[in-house]
Image (tube, rainbow, N blue to C red):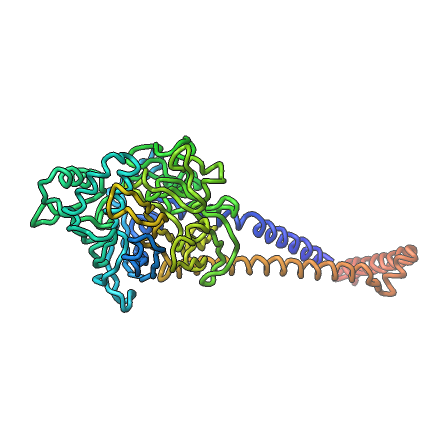
Length: 533
């Protein structure tokens, strides 16, 4: 009876401990450990990875090669053919790092380095020739047409000298020159129009360089200013004091907000720097970040749960919104009177260059853009902007930032090369900057979830063991309660006739007294006393 009672109490204690640990204690310990380890403390491994990625990102470029440039010059519908990917390894590092313990912040300057990867590019080479619309000619005309159309005649006069008497608005040249090394802008002319335009190009084109053998020949490249150079200085929160604040951007170049947009909400920073996210996020919170390339906040929305590389993850996706119908995005309209159609974003205010961003192949944009030219085939599986995100640790297992860059092409009679052009949003190229977690970092993440799974199994087994013991204790307790007690005859007589026990005790006492007396008599009649008697 006592043994079954002990088993009962012990099993109840085991069950309570198992359930309590499973429902609260284990989760609390795990959450505390994760919050501590993913913060940007100097002792944490995640900080070292955040400051310098131990592997290069995949940076791929696809050009829209123009196959009928002369026909377009005469007003016909453009035909383009995608050429790519030209694959580059992108090495990312954060330098000049400064910690502020009081503010719990970290300030850094991004440093990026691009290297062409011939193996992954396959048969494509960076000295391939492609034909695209001339980024400087079209960009320059667009800026003047928008801001100071009265000076279009000066632009028209300068084209022959600066661009060596161009016959079309298109450029044919090597990939590496267009992207990084630079294409020539001949500013050696002493004429008024070329000199005036060149002075504007020098001050307004970001990162423009010049040839070492001739400072009057400028070099324009689309990505050169980003390569092996320091960019905007950013300040983020480290998430040590409060994990939900991990990575939140609070300053860009010392400013707590931008001034490009029409509302304070759109000018404020809302989210992280895009390279780290807080742990334990709910699905409906989404992933918020600020894009320094677009100078605007972005939110990637939850789509569904899935499994990637044996880890349960969430898939998030986003697009560039719709200024024409979404009231929250009206602040990004180019002006109060003009809002772009669905899926298009004007980068002019942010970049200083009249570029328009869309998803590749005009995915999720208004259908009118796709109908303006031939050769585009939007595909969500190839062209969407998505993230596979592990929410417990805040780790992206796969992320692909895909963006297409376009020029707004419009005819004008004040510039000869533009007199017969069709009106359309003309794509130049699109890029994909992606990360696919592999190697030691992936193995460590898989090990963490394997250990959590084993710990979970152990708790279930502990609870099951307690339930089994409880069942055994209850079984033995009922078994003992229904058992029949058997006693000896003597014990039964003792309980039934107490007088019987008293008579026996009396006879035993009398016998003991007679024996004692005989012993005394024997002792008294010994020796000479017996002879005398």
